[in-house]
Length: 358
Image 1 (tube, helix red, strand yellow):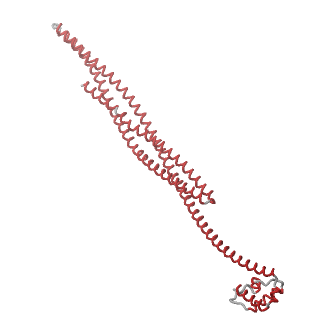
Image 2 (tube, rainbow, N blue to C red; image 1 turned 135 degrees about the vertical axis):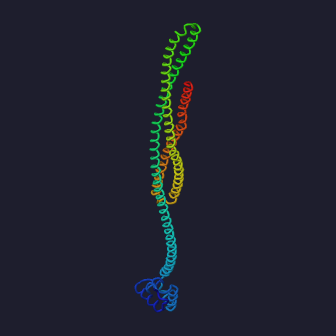
């Protein structure tokens, strides 16, 4: 630490030492000789007093170049002081700028880490959505196979019903012919009774024989009609079973409607994820403009966003295909009552057949 003050004798001794070494005794040189102690003003004042004491002889000894050197030394000292002050101010400013830049870099790193975490969460959510879509697609495929099998069974039963209807029509035609023959026979018998009143007893035996034959024929036809009624009853039972199967299919389709609603919710969530991804991409672009040093990291984040958008587009395509499948299932479900309505007409035909039999 420099001393608070110096003595004139110390300045004289330092001046003499400098002169002995052939150096000009400037203020800075004397202060350096004193160990960088004392103020320059004090040293300058002591030098003036020493020059005045030495008188004109000393002044004559000092050359003009030495006076210029003294002035140059003072100017250099002043310039050094100003330079030190400006250098200290610039150093403080540079340190503040470096601290602010470090804070900004830390904030950007934290924000990039947040974007990375958000991208990872979005990737996990998309994977879960893909798994759910795969399960739904498998369920729809199974239901479509079952429905195709049931449709084939219904077509087979319709073919069987058509054959039974044709057989029933044939039996009705035979029964009608039998009734016409019986009516014709009764008419002929009546005419024969009117014409052959006297031969009634002989003809009655013949007529009784004919009547027995006709009764046997009628009984046979009635037996055929009974068997036809039994077949109709069996077909009605099978129709009831088919209605039960259709009801069961409608019950199994209800979970598919619930799955369609869940798919709609998933699509809404995907839209929200897409909006978040767009906001994240916008923020990344702003960070790229502000900090050029983080261009590579933010570029990676943009690439991750592009991949997420591609996955979202694929998920939308899968959702659209699921919606299309559900629409097909809904149309086929609405068309099911039309198919099940055909046996009812067959029931009416059976009732009319019973009426005609009576």
